[in-house]
Length: 438
Ligand code: ASP
Image 1: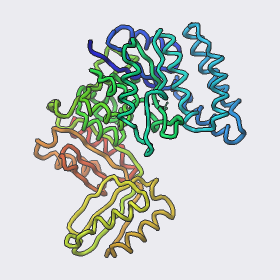
Image 2 (image 1 turned 120 degrees about the horizontal axis):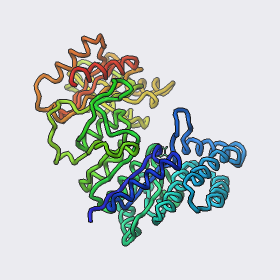
Image 3 (image 1 turned 120 degrees about the vertical axis):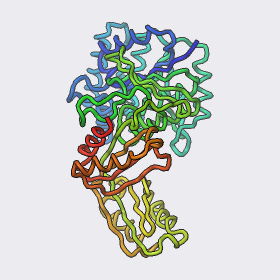
Image 4 (image 1 turned 90 degrees about the horizontal axis):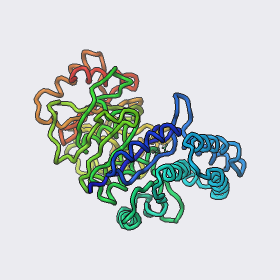
């Protein structure tokens, strides 16, 4: 039988009613066997996610040695859920233990992980399923990266022969034996890891939207939905700000060519978006699949005559950045010019001065300029590589909208054109490109 791994996000776990709906979704398909859950998210606009309250609990432990008053909000959230579900589950004892552990552990990752842990315990009880703790099956190595081999081996052995299984998302065990979390939104990665380990036929990711849109619906009213896209397109779009799925979720499923299906818990009848291996993907006829962007990049522009003839020039510049531990997004270049684009948070304050001094000493440029408050907007689609005039249309649309382009970078795979514009132009830029191609 085909096996599906289903990950349910925070809004799908927000209260007892939604969890009951999720139960119905899971039980309606016997192929849905491995369930990964997030911590309860927001129930309404200005509600607070359980994970955010847990970070506040950790701050309280650091300040006062205990989290009693902050933890009362966690308490009322989870007791409310169990009451709404009407299940026979001793949440009070579990909450007492958890509070004591948070006070005793004094670890930010342990504290943050407890939302997923408690939620998975409740969900397992609701489903009559086996609870498998992520700490026993997901492992990180010394460098803080997933230890894929150990994780896959342990996880597949642990779930072998079990029926329905619930696993908390977001965390595992670090090389030091302590709980360690992925970055925020990391339950998507946990779901993908479980899918990879059990060699699932499908990774279903259940959220509160019916898949990806060609651009952010907050920018363009009712944009076109994306019914199918490739792993590569997903990676480009989610990295650039389309935040339906964590951008690192792609790696575990890509190894085994497992397709991902984005589904809406609140509209399960909607088809959602299928994300398929790039080699199995045939463009749908649209030149552009999607447009996404995000703000706050800094561009260091370097000019030097005969740069092209100076062997090692680029390496020297990059070595300076490496020395400062700065990761780079793009390196557009000309004959005598190159630019390096990075997130502004990496070069804030005096650090930028030090980086510029380092570059000057290393390569003695004729001219060095810094532009900040830059937003990067990516236009992505496999269809672009085979269609003449795409860039011309894109730049004309931006010119007509009066948007000044500060930087252009076309990925070598020709499925991606990135433009740098002022932060304030980010949304207008996305809208102008959308209206040109859709
Ligand atoms: N609960 C964690 C967060 O809010 C992880 C997740 O939901 O994926 O980031």
